[in-house]
Length: 255
Image (cartoon, rainbow, N blue to C red):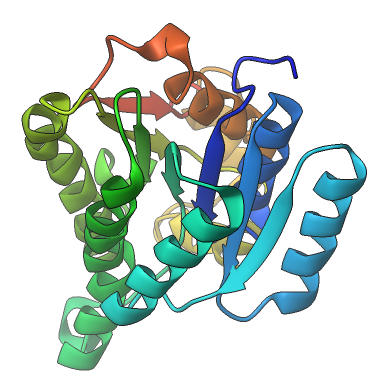
């Protein structure tokens, strides 16, 4: 085996599509075996597992709703059993939300935080039970946690909390030789951005989403999922062994 992640065993939550699928592919390309979690995209997850297996790495797909702590525990146990251990957690599962202050319901609030925040917390709790020295955890935040977006307070706050989780768990996990970091991507070309991209434009701004991206970021474009996956792969590699408790902003210079 060769590659920066040779011999490692990784779990990617929300791994069937978008950034999660790109992370799973990158981990496999770098030598890791991968467990791919999905909630509803079974065909995409199984196809990705078959693709990775055909490329010479081991890959398995497991269904679990990350909003349910019991399912998270079952998922991490299944992944560790199937792969023969667990060295890496890439916690990517998340849901988008836009809504005015007066329209957000308690049920919506609970659902968004159950997936984006609570789900990531308990994914860490359960995954690290299977990790030893050299374990790696990457949580998924968002550029929205660092930039005000109209009608986006619920989603952004659920992601900002994830950065605090990474910061405050770092000394506890550091005693076990495990690093934990968060990644805050900017706009990325996924089906989620296709659906919600226009809502990132302030209603008083007379411009479409591509124009806003061109004029409000240093690189003037959105990221490809593979570019975000490359950052995740770095953070779980030995090259990032002295980085923990940090949030990396991969946003193309969003200003």
